[in-house]
Amino acid sequence: MIIEKKLLKQDSVEKLFAKLKADGRRILAPKAQGDEIFFEQVASASEMAKDYIQTTLSPKGAVFPRVEALFRYQMEGKDVKIENNSEPQPTVIFGLRPCDAASFAILNSVFSWDYQDSQFKSRLAQTAAITVSCSRADEYCFCTSVGGSPGDTKGSDILLTRIGSGDYLAEILTEKGKAMVTLAPELFAEAPSEDKEKYLAKVPVKFDLKKLTEKLPEAFNNNELWMEQSLRCLGCGACAFVCPACVCFDIQDESKRESGVRLRCWDSCGFSLFTAHTSGHNPRPVQSQRWRQRVMHKFSYFNDRQKYLGCVGCGRCSRKCPADMNLLEHLKAIAEAR
Amino acid sequence: MAELAKSLYLPKSATIRKVIPMTESEKFYQLGFDDGSELGHQPGQFVEVSLYGVGECPISISSSPTAKGFDLCVRKVGRVTEAMHQLKEGSKVGIRGPFGKGFPAEALKGKDLLFIGGGIGMVPLRSFINYSIDRRKDYGRIILLYGSRTPKELFNFPEFEDWKAGKKDVELSLSVDRGDDKWKGNVGVITTLIPPLKLDLEKTFAIVCGPPIMYKFVLLALEGKNFKDDHIYLSLERRMKCGVGKCGHCQIHGYYCCQDGPVFHYPLIKNIKEAL
Image (cartoon, rainbow over all chains, first blue to last red; front, side):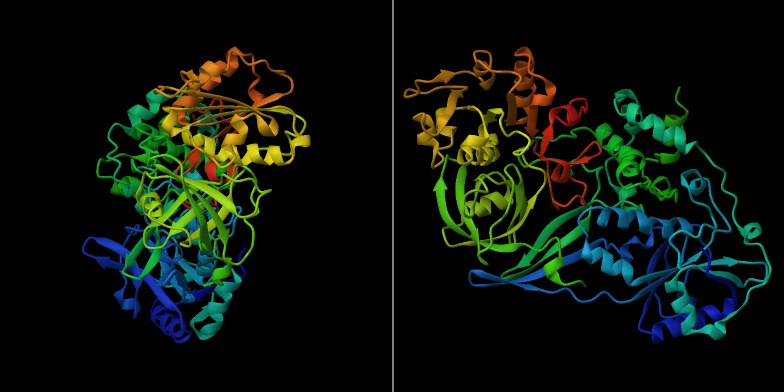
């Protein structure tokens, strides 16, 4: 639902950043590190990467950090003193793509389907997304096959689309978005009567999602399929670490003498130890079963329980796979199998 | 950050009240919460045990909720459990839980219960066995088949002598894979105890817990006895990390073992290759 449309001049982004910072918010935006682009805290809009189709990592870490403390503890004789975590800082993510914005709802569906994960939810509540729609796409992009699009508004608080003049057409989508506009109303001018569609990348639909989800439950028992697809899989977990929707994590302690911290860390179902029991028994002893778990979880189990797909079609897993596995090709093969 | 009291990951402090060595590698612990509260579990559920600075691991609850405090039986096998074996009476641990779906104690009222436990699988079964003994009138026969590799590895739970002596109305049969000089009982895998049983199949429900390999053969033996699939419940082991259906480690097909299990109705998982 669009609350209102405005025009944000290209040179107003810097001023908007200043207003957001003055309001006590940290701004995470795409920043280049060599050939890679990561979401990092920026002081000025000039630090941002200029030209990118997709960032290396999604901004998932803003709401679900790669490593975070669940709590800290201090041993005092036989007793233990637990220390509170501090409040998360209000955060604005700027320059994420619509696929990444859509991923927050997927993460939230896991962190709140039954037990409510207060740590995740408070971070999410403190985070606002100013998304920039996609004017370009590459062969790895498949958002339109999984319910998204280059100008999709899902999950964004403000969606910016760069129009011919170089300025941004701003769609104010939520109360959070409105609150940011209220911080600097003078920067948001009346919107021109332009259709954003003509400025958006064209991403063709690459497989029939309905067919895929119908075929997956039966494909589960097709060992040959999973063996063939996973032959190249190294089990390195890179696909999970770059995925904006992967939510599996590990819990580990780190301690020094009397004090320590219990950490939550990203994990991957592609790792052989992910399911290994201490006894040595492993319910998923071979890589083909782990690959199957990855595909089934995202496109079948997720769908059944959380009513979301566990994928937004950003294509990062395929761009970053060191063995050049391509999820899209595998999904197409399953959807089109007779 | 929300109040830590609401955090899913914050353990509650409990004190070890008693340690009883069971076998060479297993110890039995009686615990109680320091704030005086009870665990409030159902038979068959599990907890996450925390040793600060070492880590956390899932352990099934061995005591019946009808008793005060709660019991755990821990095999020394990994980092956390090895550290746990160093602890003495009076030591403190952190506890999260109880988690998961236990045995269907309500639904099985009035039924004959056939418990089949292998090795450390006996630990969660004990919770339901003691529960059904404490509510003896609610249940029909209580039959327990319990097997281990050697006589030395049989758990000597505090009430075990009573069961062996035929008290408490428990029909106990023991078997070991390999006997020793003193062993006068059955020798053979646990499935050898199944064919001779005289059961009312309409009324009997099997409740099974043991190592992965045991399920395969116990299920075959029950099938040979014309047991119906929906009269079988199995308690499964997985690497539950969070216990609250988030971290993904314990997923079995679309199920979270920590939420939908660890006790599963057999028809639910029968056709899932990865489950058993």
